[in-house]
Amino acid sequence: MVFAVATNNQKKLKEIQRILDSFGITAKTLKELGINIEIEENGTTFEENAVIKAKAIAEIANLPTISDDSGLEVDALGGAPGVYTARFAGEHATDDENIDKLLAELDGVEKEKRTARFVSAVCLYMPDGRNTVCRGTCEGWIGWERIGDGGFGYDPVFMVEERSYSQMTAEEKDAISHRGSALRQLKEKINDFI
Image 1 (cartoon, one colour):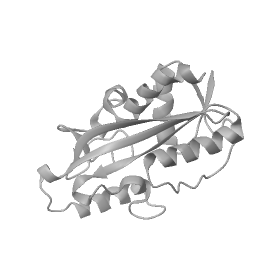
Image 2: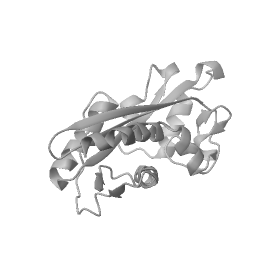
Image 3: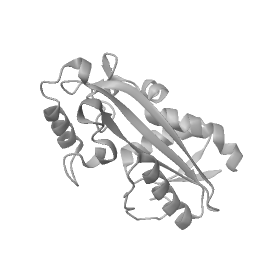
Image 4: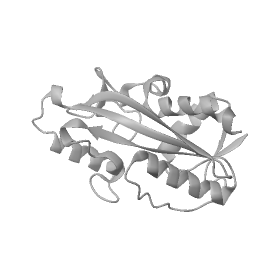
């Protein structure tokens, strides 16, 4: 069965497709489906934003649609950047600008208080309106500098034990990541929806 994936973020899309492929699910990108749309993510939670995106694309594509809304919650910052993860340093901020702001805000904060987690809310939305949302998390902490050259976003500073997401192979990251966890939960529910 073919599923649409509701994202224009090419790095996130590659990760989602890699995980779905391992489940035997064929994922079609918005580009492959001829859909060129920016969806306003105005929810106050990752779950709300995931549903907003999946619903919009399911209605346009008339296909089961998977969306992911994910982000970083840093305890020393009261859970920020949260739903504003991608635009922490401004509306069109780069990954590096977001990391720079995060590191600046945590300047002087000792390791024990740098705890954080990545959160992923993954929604499966069917053309008939049925939907489900799964939430995955990965606990870690924020390092003091970028380490590693893989991944994207905050991966170079998000540490799980003593390794950053950027130091992990794709398979290692998928096995423990927030997105991998949410998608594995979704895999268990898919047959109920098909």
